[in-house]
Image (tube, rainbow, N blue to C red; front, side):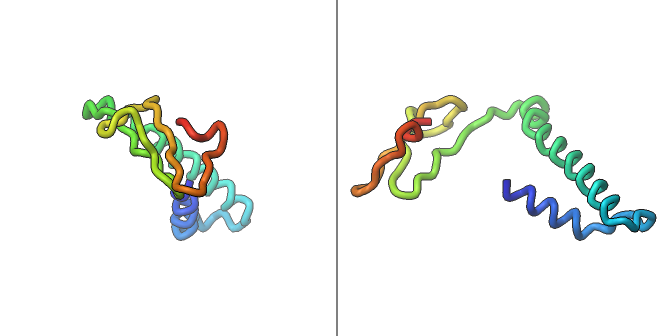
Length: 99
């Protein structure tokens, strides 16, 4: 979600049409542009998969105080089971120890 703030900042830097002097009109225009950008970003992955035959792969989840162990070490596909192994002194949150 960090990219949304970056996009908002970038949109803020771009000049909005001079005819809309009202701040609410500018805000509405920015929201519309943001909606269009979000739609484009959402369509990127399926477009790359279709156009270039890419295969979706996942990264091993990051664990702050331990490590994640997955059923497969490389080429992790969606819905692969991963478990958290906590460092000494830490306990996994019940219900969040397997993804």
